[in-house]
Image (cartoon, rainbow, N blue to C red; front, side, top):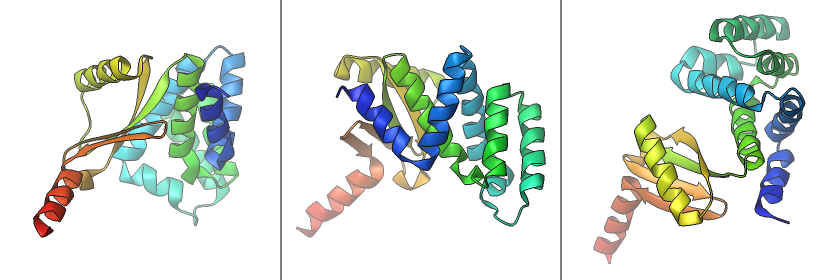
Amino acid sequence: MDNSSGNQANVQASLSGRYATALFELAREAKAIDTVEASLAKVQKALSESSDFAALTTNASISRDTAKKVVAAIAKAMKLDALTTKTLGVLAENRRLAETAGVARAFAALASAHRGEITAEVTSAHVLSAAQTKALSAQLKARVGRDVAIASKIDPTILGGLTVKIGSTLIDNSIKTRLNSLAQAMKG
């Protein structure tokens, strides 16, 4: 099994992965992979920047109908493509809006594999600029010998630096880890 097949099998194993796989197949048939990927990136950004939107996805007390209406309004305001809008509606209908971020990550991994890229999960304390992301992608490409797509996550608890996970390889260059290593060395 090559690495992209392994990644696809891993993606399909989770609930969000099953939704992402279904969406990916529809997007591939419609020749809209890039469009859907861009819409899902907008959704991920909104989830990380809007506590109200994030709360909507995790609030179990909101009725299905209300969730569907709110999601449809958000999708319209964000100018999301029809496939992404419909998928968000299905997630709302099935009371699975909490899977939204996972669907976006899984879809990005599928799209990367489709393009022959490998995905690096990058965690940073702050949002990386476009220039930083481009430079990191170029450095990782030089290291692994393939195009690398960056899937970014923000985790302020790492204080600074980055953690990069490519497949089973973890590169932890976070300040938190460095401080913990220094503390262990000082203990003795």
